Image 1: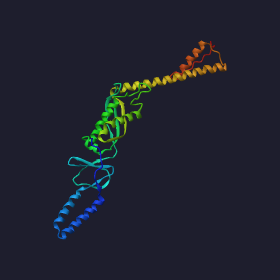
Image 2 (image 1 turned 90 degrees about the vertical axis):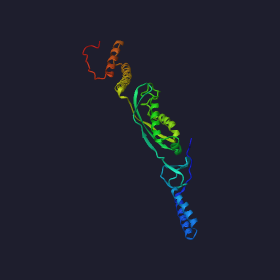
Image 3 (image 1 turned 135 degrees about the vertical axis):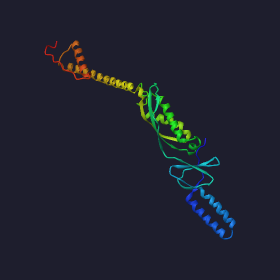
Image 4 (image 1 turned 30 degrees about the horizontal axis):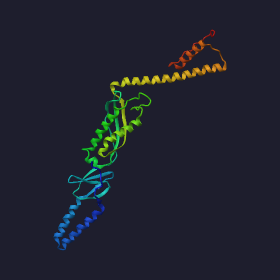
Length: 281
């Protein structure tokens, strides 16, 4: 595995006046009668000029010589190196990648649509250039492969309270997705800074049925909460009537009262009162 190392380069702002001075000195040598030395010196000086190159901030120059990796230059500004070095520019800036919506079956076999956003950057220029054919294409393909594998490992909705699911645990799923993508992209010299799900939904063929199931689950949960509260209120009402000695009820009348209160408290429609003008019994 080829890993990044520091390549040879000098400050171009220092080398530039040195080459100018050498060029002028060799011109004076020619004028003084040493034409051979002056011509050879000027020729060698002229061959040094292609060694200048510019490095932008958050960029690197990967240098090779006859197929051998000679190092990378990260220092920004005007630099100079051996003119025979072939220099390839690679960006170290942070980038965003949004995957396409892919259809995959979750852990329970339900077809879902999912997409993600990956924030990444190149941290090892040598690995990015030499370990993979095209590191940008590698990031795109491997990110989608990791997303597909992660989505098939978890259910869309949790089946119990302790189960991690795609919809109910976004932060945990994001951490798992980031780790899985990083494992795939590490060999390409890429660091994943963040990975999150940008789109999550049931596939169209089952979206309607799953929506009905979610609504039914919500209704059942709401009804359970209403019944729990209604039972507590009935218990409190009977206890207060007994403590205040407002009225004495036998077991049959208590059952009727409990039934009426539960109907009033648990009904989803407003009740219509019926006034009893006769005796209690």
